[in-house]
Image (cartoon, rainbow, N blue to C red; front, side, top):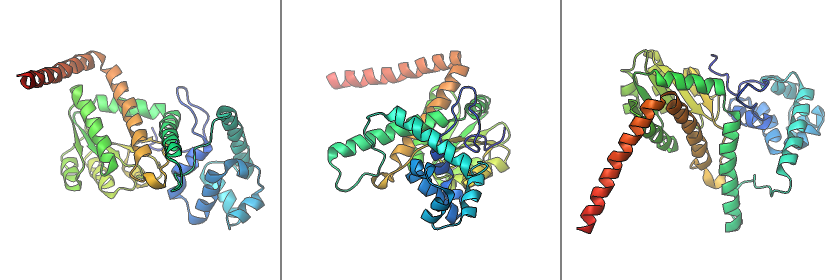
Length: 312
């Protein structure tokens, strides 16, 4: 399976999955575009309906670039030309209007003068949207392959730093509870040390919202060099992490000014982790149920002992 099969082209819907919206796709590819193409992409992200109603000449003028650049951008994101892009944007804008109805638009950044009520609404909307968008564009074929690789792995390494470190730890804990040998590494030296002793039959998972975290990319590269299968979870499928990953699972999160600490992106990553974990639990149902019951009873016994000590 091609390592960039998820989110890499304008494809018809796959059975069991949904085609990502054009805006989501463009946002995920934004860092990999040339500067002039980035201006075109940002214009579409900011106002897709307006672009759908603009001529190529108007769009080029608005983005301070040429019509040739607009056409090149369309081909970069796998459209034959600007006409096809306009038709897709217009269609998606119409669908969004129908789905949105009278719901208040809460897609903008959190502003310094927003009321606390508005802040709560925007956070709730952004978090829910990150989870929904991630689920809608997740490549089911890639997800299935990742689940099968993990199920057959001798050992699983999970790499993540910063906010992604919490997701790595969550994934490791879930796997450990069902008896799968896994290790979450959040220090660059520890990652590389562990990756260096992996071998064929092992799996390494790198988690990075940007896909450019050098520690995580470096550890995945080392794991791959040793023969392990490598998996990336990222928001940007054409980022450096893709070059060292055999399979990519993409998230669809957008951070805002006051939320650069990766709140929405973490929720999106956890959504992917949950999908992988539940798929594994289904595949290993008998062993999973037995392991979950055993770990629950062990923790329950500890909790009862503590309560008894407090009463005494």
